[in-house]
Image 1 (cartoon, one colour):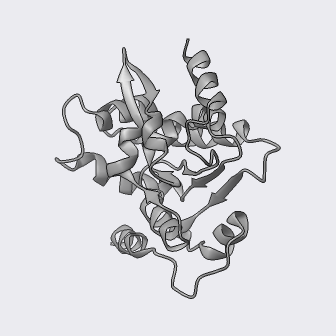
Image 2: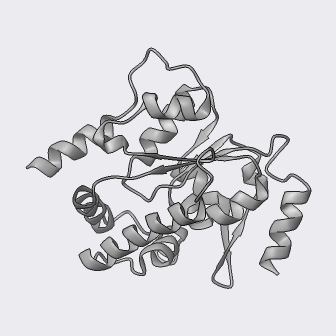
Image 3: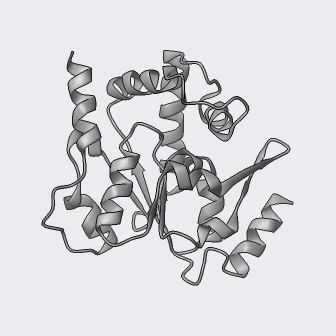
Amino acid sequence: MLKTVVQCLAKFGLCGTNNSKIFGIGLSKTGTLSLARALDMLGFRAAHWQYTKTLINYVDGKPVINSGQLQEYDTFADIPVSRIYKQLDTICPGSKYVLTVREIGGWLKSIERHVLRPDVFEKGGIGEQLHLDLYGSIEFHEEGFKESYNSYVRDVMSYFRNREQDLLVIDICAGEGWEKLCPFLKKPVPERRFPTAHVYRTREANQQ
């Protein structure tokens, strides 16, 4: 049933008048906000968590894509996109995908702080459901989250095998930026600095 719905969305172009989008499919705390800000600087209408989360409605425990929201922005980033990137690949042919990654030790420290924040999850809300889907838990367990991260990256790389023109892997947290993103999107490099303020704060915290 879900496959049929996805095929219908693709047929009638419900990604918008231009079916191709840019999707940031990295997990939380891998530089997804920096990516969204960079895409905005390149002239795209970019959506992060507050808008990207409306891409999904859960029906009987399964994510259903809100096709109307797809028409509002050119780019989407954060874990709602991570959860449904394969469906989006069918609905939005010709789209580009950006997998933000980072060194696993730094990611574990950052995601642990994120999960422990009291305001992260609304009980029964979409954030809680997404973390259950992607990590198997809303409570931080280092080995479980590590395996989930590695498994997710392997899955993305396997899915996009032999499609190098569609997938960019970028480590914003390690300092990668315009020099990788702009050629991938065929955009000139801006004169402005790549937006990585949160990344630098994370580096400092990890060194303490």
